[in-house]
Figure: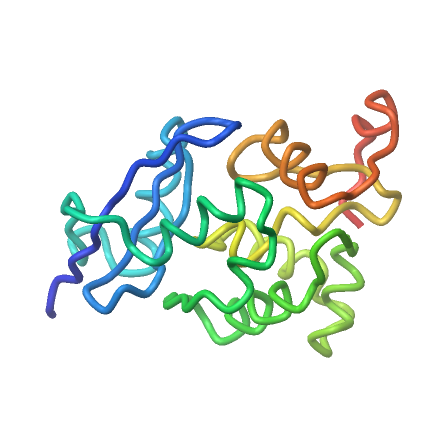
Length: 184
């Protein structure tokens, strides 16, 4: 088995240090946060095997890095057509493809996402696929919320989900109501 070399970049954002991983062809393979590196390595291990990838520092900024910086600076469409390459199951990739179809500034529920991929009873599986997404922000898992409009978990921390949604112009309920549980 050939080891996949991933090039890592560290970029400051308003919500913490972002890690951007691209492959030798410049395709985005992972986005995560510095304080969530163990989670990122766990996801990469699931996708490529624990010994199936190696990280190398990138010498020059990648296209993915430039576009994510533009997005963070307010140029929201900058990441719309950014090329990503992910492993994952066919089901996960179906979920991730559909996530990219959620317009900036809009949210949907997990059950709506399940319906959109033609699997209305697979709500929990959709939630798991959402959580296994290695290229957050670009594959906007933060745009999925509970059926009662509550904010559910986000792999990079709920405070980042709030920031990303507000950055995209989503009007959130007052903080008290955001804390209500409810995945579906």
